[in-house]
Image 1 (cartoon, one colour):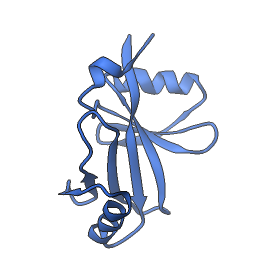
Image 2 (tube, one colour):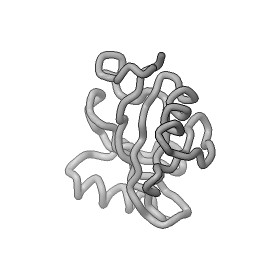
Image 3 (cartoon, one colour):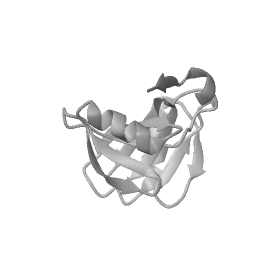
Image 4 (cartoon, rainbow, N blue to C red):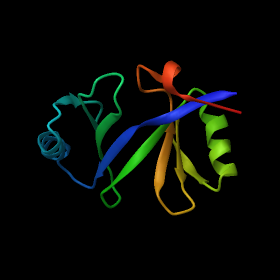
Length: 123
């Protein structure tokens, strides 16, 4: 058994200026940016129990994708494959997947402070 739940949303930006992209989204959403989180990410300052929001510099067309957090990434990826998703690849510890309807999403380690109390238990 493992646990999983929606972790949050990643705003993928095909840009050379991540700082400007993060400033736009921070201002648009009224959520302060925490500053760079590596060369490709800027996290927005949500509360630990809220959905994680992040601006990401990417080389593909801009879009929004979601992250599903799991305490067993491989078990969650297999569960999602059984539902019809397909595995695209991995980026570090993250598994990139695609829903049967074409949307890309990632399975990631737990991100939210309330994960243990609010995540769904999976068989």
